[in-house]
Image (tube, rainbow, N blue to C red; front, side, top):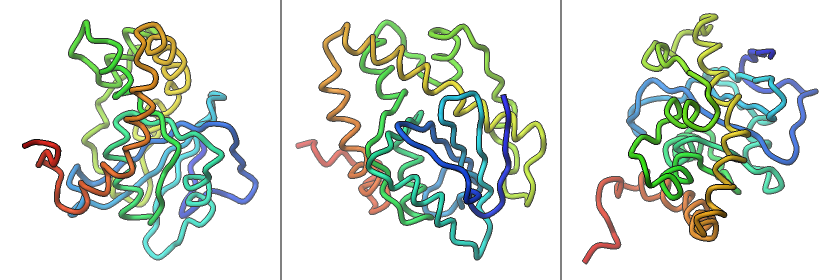
Length: 202
C-alpha cells in the first residue's frame, strides 16, 4: 500500500479508469458552513491519492476525474460527499455506487451500516476512526490523518463487490441503482434547503 499526498490538484501523470473509490474530509458536517479540506481517491489497487484542497487553486484534473461519466465513483454515505463536491468544486459526480445505501438495502438483519461496521462484518477488517474528528484544516495532514483518510477509500472496491452480490441475492439491485441515480438530486435538495424535509410526504 502506498499513500500519495498532493497539494492543490492531482499531478498530471495520475490517470484513472473504470471505477474509483472517493471520500472527503471536511471541517465539519454542515454543508453551508464547513469547507472541503481533502479528497481521497483509490483505483482499488491498494494505493490512495490524497488531494489537499488549497485556497485559490483550481483542482482541474481532480474535477475532471470526478465529473467523468465513464468512471464509476464508489462512496460510503455518498449523499454528503456528493453535496460537498458539488458545492465546493462545482462538479456533479455520476455514476455513483454508495456502500451505505447498498448495506441498508440488503443487510436488513442489522442497523449498523457505518464503514467501520461493514468493513468488519464483510471483510474482517477493523478500522480505527480516531482521526475522524481531528482538524482537517491544517495545511499538511499528519501521518495518522493520512492513514485514516486512505483507509476510507482502500476498502470500498471489495465492499462494493460483496454488497453487489448481496443486492442481487435479495433482488434489490434495481432499487439500489435507482437510489444511486437519485443521489445528485438528493444532494441538490440538501444544498437548496430541503435537507430535513421529506418532500414526498403528504
